[in-house]
Amino acid sequence: MRLEGKVAIVTGGASGFGEGIVRRFAGEGAKVVIADLNVEAAQKVARDIDGLAVRADVSNWADVQALADAASKRFGEVDVLVNNAGIGHKPQPLDTISEDTFDSILAVNAKSVFLTARAIVPRMKAQKRGAILNIASTGGVSPRPSLTWYNASKGWMITATRAMAIELAPFGIRVNAINPVAGETPLLATFMGEDTPEIRARFLASIPIGRFSTPDDIAATALFLCSDEASMITGVALEVDGGRCI
Image 1 (cartoon, rainbow, N blue to C red):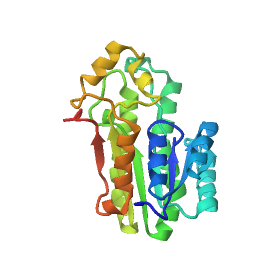
Image 2: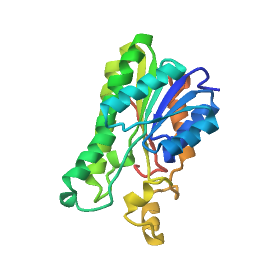
Image 3: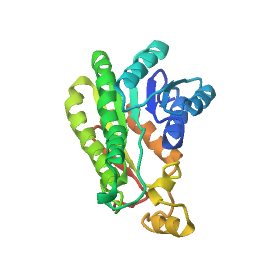
Image 4: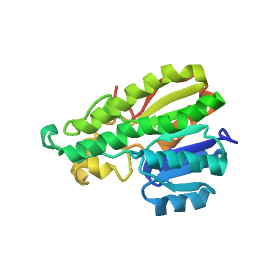
């Protein structure tokens, strides 16, 4: 019960890594708010864990503000914020990505971190405690070709994590990131372009441990970084990648 009595928001919490984090947090005693565009899927997870589902576009200020208000109204002030929502693009040359796609990637992967901070950080400052976790990517450390603008958005998130950690430490707020390697989530097919045995083998060949990451892998790391056991850890971007970035 490492999160007993704590209130957590997990964006993109209805599937993939986010769902894994939601279920692990709830199992460790947290009251969890699941923010997702797919509200039906979020509601299903919420029923399983006695949590709260909120439909939210994390790139929209009004939605993020409403999310923070809904969390506080239902459970009280937020102790843990996990910025997990993210999107990618299919592998293609950097000069062929449309402006709309680029804008969407930056809005969901980068602007959302700004918006959730704007909504949640003042509340955390008032209570002089909090943990923020950003789900970045190994792509922000060791980029894969033809995913340039996705890689760049995750590199932005890693830098934002470190800058936030320095600024918010005096307020008792810790900020960390996780850099997952490609995982068995709905985004995997997007990153690969198409899901074939040959492409899977090529991806797996870059991971020394020889498998993709799983929601359980990321959830276990998220639990540690957001718990009081990690009270001396801030500004870390931790690879959970089976050795890919070595």
